[in-house]
Length: 224
Image (cartoon, rainbow, N blue to C red):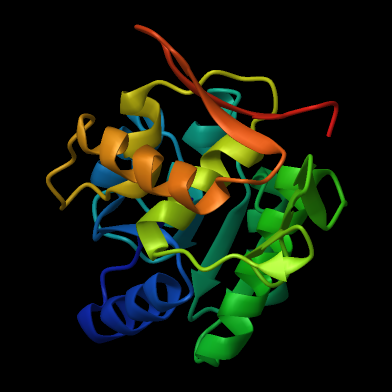
């Protein structure tokens, strides 16, 4: 799952980015509003974290342009401004949550989890495909009642598949959820991760189906 973090304060950006990556998310870090606007117009994100006081375009302008394009991804605003009118302005523009600086990293992580849980599951806390369950609160997979051990990139691939039921995901679409903008993304490497996942799912009533030339889809077997 891919998150856009837009923050021009280097130390805070590094701390927040590290916290989110340790929690298992793929994070793209940008430092100005123009770059953020371009990324949000062209890339696929599950959530954006926008600082209000950005150079070139401020966070309010970035948010306004995002909503004008009809994009509904959740947005968490960060600001050093504590005034009520600023918070109201951001919320009226379409922000989903607001966090004033300074803040605890644990609180930011909890708010991100809550926003993603609501947006991805419509208020539900789990995604299920046959005997495989993905818990949005803990961000863990359970297979046949037991925890499924996955690397961070295996988890990103499987999460992309289970949160899009009945949808074929191309290698490029999967790679976009696994690799950040500053990483060398390889669509062909998805074959490796899918192969590893199939080994870990072997014996369970669930499978990753290959649609030649199109991509992959997760589906239950034997009516599971």
